[in-house]
Structure formats: C-alpha cells, structure tokens
Amino acid sequence: MKSDSRPPSALTIAGSDSGGGAGIQADLKTFAAHGVHGLSAIAALTAQHTRGVTAVEVPPTAFLAAQIDACFEDFRIEAVKLGMLATAGVIETVAGALDARGGTRLVLDPVMIATSGAKLLADDALAALRQRLLPGCQVLTPNLPEAELLLGWRIPSLEAMHDACAALRAMGAEAVLLKGGHLEDGGARVVDLFADASGVRAFEHPRLDVDAHGTGCTLASAIAARLALGLETGEACARATDYVHRALLGGYRPGRGDVMVLDHF
Ligand code: PLP
Image (cartoon, rainbow, N blue to C red; front, side, top):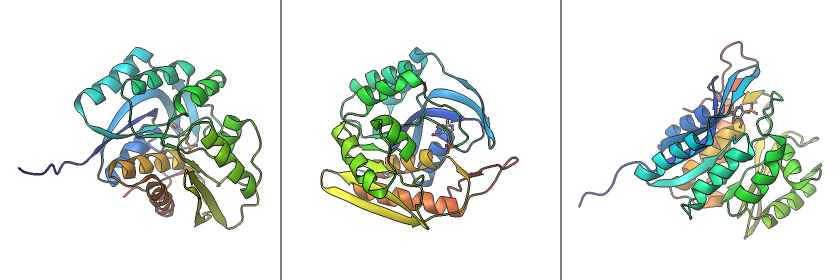
C-alpha cells in the first residue's frame, strides 16, 4: 500500500492581526515554512498595523466552537497552538472543545499584552487561563511579564527564572519555555529556560537590537509545527528558538515600519 506522504496538520486557535505580523497570520506562515498544513480557528480579531492595535472584536463563542469542530471533524490534528484568547468566555469555550478531544499536544502561549502596550487578555480571564488551560498543556511559553502575572511575583534575575519554571510546572504545565528577552541586565545574550520532568536547559542566542512584532506567536507555532513533525518537546523548543532567531535576522519593516515583522522563508 502507498504510504501517506501528506504533511501533518497543526491547528492555531488565536487572534487575527490585520497587519500580518503576529497572531494567526504569523502562525500560518510558520506552519507553512515548516512543511506543516496549517488550520486556524479565529478566537479574536484585531485591527492593527506596525504601530499598534486600533480595535479588537471577539466573535461569538458558538462560532469559535464551530471552527474548532470543523477542524477536528475532518483533519488529523497533530498539535494545537493557543495564542490570543481575549476573554474568559473564549478560554472556557476552547477548554471545553479540547477536553472533548483528550490527548491533543497543546502549546500554550499565554498572550496578555502586545509589545505596543495593547491589552489582548481581559483582566478577569487570567484565572480561567490558569485553571482551565495551563494544567496539562505540553508546553507553556510565557515571556517574563506574562509569567509574573501568572505567578503573582517578580522575576528579576536568571535565578528567579529557574524558580518561576518550577512554579509554573507545579501549576500543571508539563514543560515550560520561559523566554528571557525582557530580563533587565540581560547583557549581550538572551537566555530562554526550558524545564520539564528531566530538568532545566538553557537556550542562548545573541541579543539582536531590533523592535520586532510577532516573535512570541512565531515561537509557539514553530514549537507546535515541530511537535506535529514528531520531535520530542525539548528538541522542538530548542529548534524553535533557533528558528525565531533566524527569522529575526531576515526581518523587514513593512508599512510605515515602526516595528519589524519576521521573515519566515
Ligand atoms: N496581535 C495578536 C493577534 C497577537 O496574538 C499578538 C501576540 O501574541 C500580538 C498582536 C502582539 O504581538 P507583539 O507583542 O509581538 O507585537
């Protein structure tokens, strides 16, 4: 019998960025660059460009559930990436849909505030994120401000990043990739910490002096793509951090170009 040569499928459940730099648009470009078929369920719509977010709209949750159902009914989904989920109602809908399909590999990017300062998660949604999506996710990918909000304490040093990884795993994430780019006095290198049941590994890259947009979305979807391709979690995270570094090196400034978007190809 002929073997199945079709690419694996990965699903992003996230927000749309009309400027094409972050969110669903970054995720689909990342999946394509990895040779993975990309599916999407749009959890929120943003009107935005390289200078900021001008409006946000959240579609009815029944419509979000219909998008997720349509994807699961027809495709064999190897990994799911979760990005901007906007409200507690959206989080509840996503959690319900995923609970009904146990065993999905889940990469959770706990999107809260855009680099431009725009709020992408309602204040009252933080508890829902902690309780409904964090437990059991295969990889949680917070930056330092997001990890601080999830934990309720400051992370001012590399040592504190180690404690934060342990605490986030204790909250139920199987693995944590804690992004160190926001660390003050980080120096010439960016250190991301990966923690799972076997211990902690550091992934280091030279710090690039660029204002970029969509790096977190791209990292999480690159991890989901690598998981869909069959890599184990630590290796998927290591390669995904390299991928984002390369995409940053090739980035460009579209529009009026206040921030750069990543080059995925
Ligand atoms: N817009 C959407 C839809 C997003 O999902 C995100 C981040 O996840 C952003 C904007 C913010 O991206 P950045 O902080 O890289 O500008």
